[in-house]
Length: 165
Image (tube, rainbow, N blue to C red; front, side, top):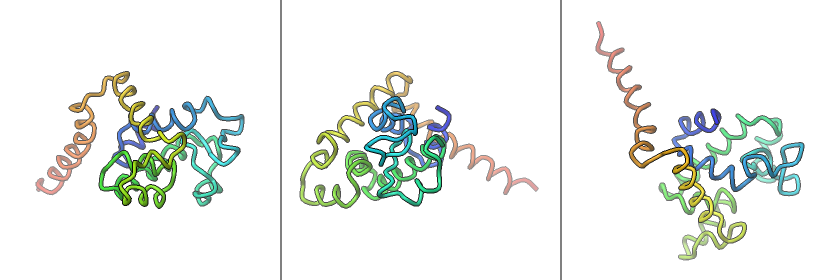
């Protein structure tokens, strides 16, 4: 769990969303083989980083390096969220189906789920996110505070550094 919290803080992605993706991708690792691979050997680790599209990462990290896997998957997802202007549904769909494919469907006014595995990937992941939040007791207020608190602390420390003489 610590890797998910670290990644959540590092890339400002809700921990519940990261856990939901790991749940869908690999059943939190339980669906993977002994080499921590899935998808016919193409998906690596708990976040199922696809070696065909992320060879720079997969060739340099061990399959069972969970920390690196979660951090990389989180950064990839954060980048997708930014590309889609903060919209989670297309970003999550693109985590599965690729940015270009999802961007084309969104531009055409088509549900991005239709180009994903099972034609329900984003819907399923976002539903899992809600379940994870209920299990962890995460409310909208507590989720916001998890993002804001580090910023407040950083601001306070910066204020103290620059205003003490």
